[in-house]
Length: 194
Figure 1 (cartoon, rainbow, N blue to C red):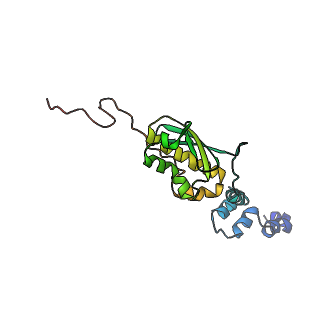
Figure 2: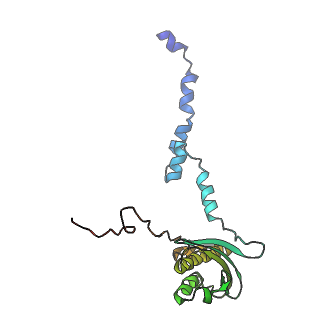
């Protein structure tokens, strides 16, 4: 036993104590947030969160085609609208017809113009769109959704205003399907006790 202790060199016993391991170095740094915790445990790289925030802060570029238009697809109920906007005098054409003839009800025209009024861009863009499916109310909602998305494609700085107004959210409410054993989706047939 005494011989074994004499054979051990003092350098071998002092080296681990003098040189801190990688785990001890990470533990020496204070952990202030989740990024520090991930770096301390080795699950994430310390530079990864900085790259994510840089990508989020980067300004988005306007998506405009060769003719100077921004395109977007809007949806509401069963209606789908393909919308192109470009700078102009505020003319809106739906399926080749003027907005006053296609959407005769003033309420529907008001719904379509809501994104422009929310961002103070009335009569500054010409809109050309094709709409399929659904009824007039659903089609007006689809055109409104498409105009809002196209505006963000043309001017990305308008996105927070349109998002806070709820214009970029696709309204997911659709007609509920009919169930077997029922007259409609939920309506039952008249009950008969006997």
